[in-house]
Length: 464
Ligand code: UDP
Image (cartoon, rainbow, N blue to C red):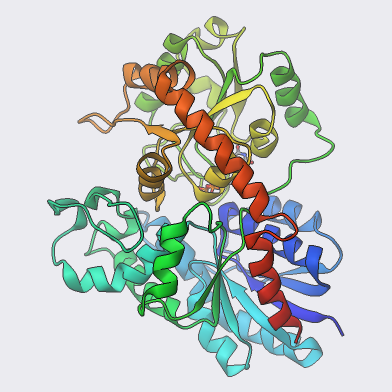
């Protein structure tokens, strides 16, 4: 019988997409039977997830667990709390499902992501080795290992620290750029993340969606540090493949790009979950207008919460109605505005795309790297500020927007970042560096590349 792998992803497309990529990559090398066990919460749409899973090869199946009820949570419960509770409240159903799978074809591994470690106890009971697939950078992984250590070291909030935090093998990070759920020590999310971080020493291995050549010193630090217990395997950059046969809006975007010169278009997107306030939407619109640059902008309805669309990846109102009066008319020859969702991978791999204004989600960063597109870093939530530091201070492939004292990125700032990327000497250097990283990423995934060898190493253990 084929070796069986069980996957238990956290809610959110940013988690599911990379785990499906990992599954794809595994199947390229070995024959496996892979079961996705999907936790759900009442009221959150599951169609985008089903679309992704239905498109998988037949060796990958999925089981949707019964929706858990989160209605007892206060309205201001953080996204991390919602994700975590969806998972922990799904644990009884996970146990039942895994037990049943075990009687048919015992999984040789349970693979989870950032929020999945509470499931390790169940895997242990059932004698299934557990693994984490880190859909984040090696730098983030170092910071996770260090979370319990920093918790002991500093009593104050991180943003009050006068000196930057120095994590082994990583560029220094200002306290205010430490991941958002750790920014309020009184919040439930903080305690939860500290607890989950401690569990990172439990799995047999951690696969990281990054590559050694991108983050050599962070990987080295984990190899050498006694604080890092599991085996670490760099297996990336695994990104979604663009569709071979784009239809509808996808097709419209690509046709539009075809009409513009090579490297001339800025792609503006805040990921599946990122949203901006109305004031910020206005400033971004005016900034793009002033810059004179060609652009594709994925617009979502404004919201004062930066991650308002995380659970459904769509906004409910027509987002274009929130743009400044006359904006669409004034930019119509050089700007394309797309409502809620765009074919990001296809856009980034199009030769007309020359820059990426991103919220610094790790998948978006990898997609930029794989396609050699330099970036404007505009982090919003989660670990995105730390990712922005990595892009600007370590890789030097992005300029970062400055947020003013009212928490807004002004139109002049946007205009100057766009010009820096497309016209300045700094932009030229970033483009050059990005194209080197693109080659290194392709090499890591080539037949004898570092990431291919790492993944094969793990796959061999799973088929034993
Ligand atoms: N994505 C997309 N179209 C969009 C927005 C996002 O295809 O309009 C995809 C993007 O290509 C990436 C994922 O959704 O694969 C977002 O993951 P990321 O880690 O960048 O950010 P998150 O959405 O989890 O914050």
